[in-house]
Length: 353
Image 1: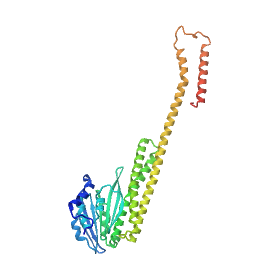
Image 2 (image 1 turned 45 degrees about the horizontal axis):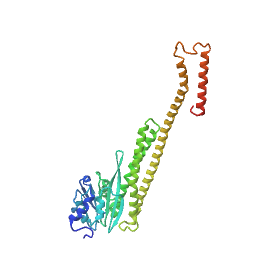
Image 3 (image 1 turned 90 degrees about the vertical axis):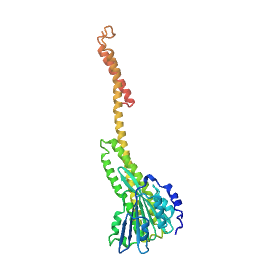
Image 4 (image 1 turned 60 degrees about the vertical axis):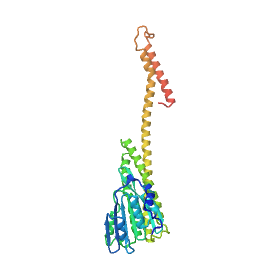
């Protein structure tokens, strides 16, 4: 049965154990859907071993694993579906880069599904393994993103019921890709609000908000760009598990990724421009403030010698010289005016006034 899986369970589990983060382990919830065009069978909270009975050439089986699987559980899945050890390692490892890997009669697709928690972008890993008559999906987040797809499968006229498993793979990929659009809409509203507040009194708060938006847009772009390459690899002509009909639909997912990346680039340019405008406004206010202080300093220097002269002759000592001059007041006043004029011309030539 097993070209890749070791016969010794303990040895194989030891190979998987070092790549898991025990702190991130979460309870598993396994849901199975076995369907044909005529009927659908759904089993919730089923064990991996119980899935064996539903693997048939006459129907399609979709198994969704919600939560963080343990190495022992992944070993059971590996034996059940004859999965490659490298595929199991990629599924169980947290923080894998989005990619597509093709093994013998199997395709592994790993995508990062962005979610927004507060002001931060969190990337939840979704792994999809497509075989000849089965599809296994893994999601390590808290909320199942594929509930709506399961409801669609229960509808007798749903296109999913009349398509092969590769079409279901496309639908799941499309769900993961489209989860980024609501986040983009939130960024659009935030940027519009910040743009309205840019010329208001909330200067420091606006700067912090703009910086946060720009940083999270960068994070979102870094998460989406590998998805573009993963979907492009999934559409390769040498991928025999996907029909040309399904690859045509996958082009739509690829277009969505391109559109998302383009929107992110536009928003990043907008936030960069708004940051430049904000800094220009701050610099302008600083320049105006410095200009007022400079002129006030020049005026203070202009009147300083005049104040010095009036201070001396305001002491009223009895034996002070020039106090008995009949024209002393006019002489001192003229001296002060000449000194003020000389200083004013000097400051004007220096362009300080």
